[in-house]
Amino acid sequence: SPTPTSRRTLRTLAVLRRIPVTLTLVAVVLAVGIIGQGLWSATENQSWFDSVAYGLPALEAGRIWTPITGTFFVASPLIYIPTLLSFIGVGLLEYGRGSRVTLAYFGVGQLFAIFATAFFLFFASMTPWPWAVALAGQLDVGASGGTMACIAACVGMLPQPWRQRAWVVVFGYAAISLLFLGSLADIEHTFAILLVLAVDRSFRIQRTTIRE
Image (cartoon, rainbow, N blue to C red; front, side, top):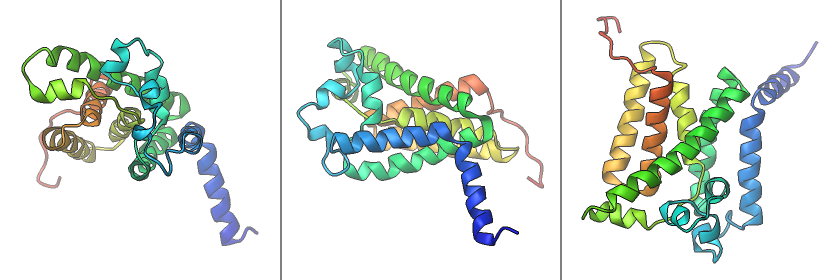
């Protein structure tokens, strides 16, 4: 009969076989980090950063490939830690809902976050709003729009009342980050969350019982 160690190995392999998209994305991010030296040197300081990073300036300059190329770069070595941790959400979604659904949430969520942020800043920067004007001139890299969309989609898989509670946590994270940090990535995260909320409609305000 299988030993406890072999049973754990078989279970681990069974899990890994169910998350090929997640493993592929992580492998690509790490490979790009090695090729571009982003694992040990800040990508945002490289001379070629502007040619791969996405944002309103890149789109205005006609660099339409940047939403794809920028997805797999990471701004600095330290950011690899939260980046790789965020792929746990991608893996959970893939394990629960399959590879096609996960790839759709990740891809559409990432592209929507990038383009919606650029669209918002294009018009907001026309106003005398210093925050919007400053962000409109910035570039970004990373897959956080896609991973945030997958994390938000994971919330929809939770049973009640935990689903509603998890949504409150996600909303709180987005609101606090946007209000107190207000970076380009924070806007992208907000749009990714709003997209998932509009698609799966899993957030419904319900009366809770005393037991809940």
